[in-house]
Image 1 (cartoon, rainbow, N blue to C red):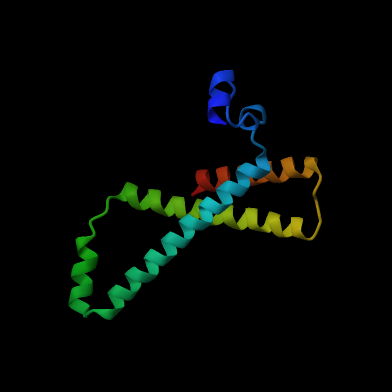
Image 2 (cartoon, one colour):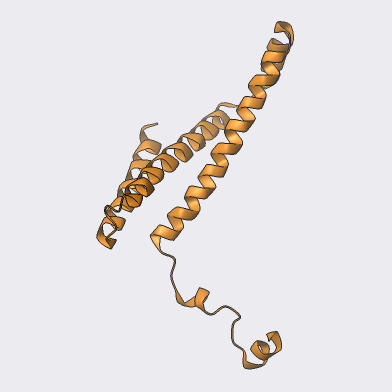
Length: 127
């Protein structure tokens, strides 16, 4: 099969080159990525809290003081988590609305997508 495509100079998956990505598919992919990111963050946070609470007070102080993070890293991680959380929340609400069969027209899809992007941009600016 691959030899036939190579001889005729045709791509293996031509449908990937013909269609442009839709907003709903891109938002679905980013919804999954944000869910995985939030899961990783909260699991790490729970493990970190568990380690801190299981040791002695002096060791807790030494552990916390050994994490010398710069201000920009703290701001970057807190903004990333906030954006992941807000995006996942708003996109999840949109999917719940779709599950009820409401606003399934293409004009509402673009309005919800625009609302989602504007709200994320505003949160990023005003944070």
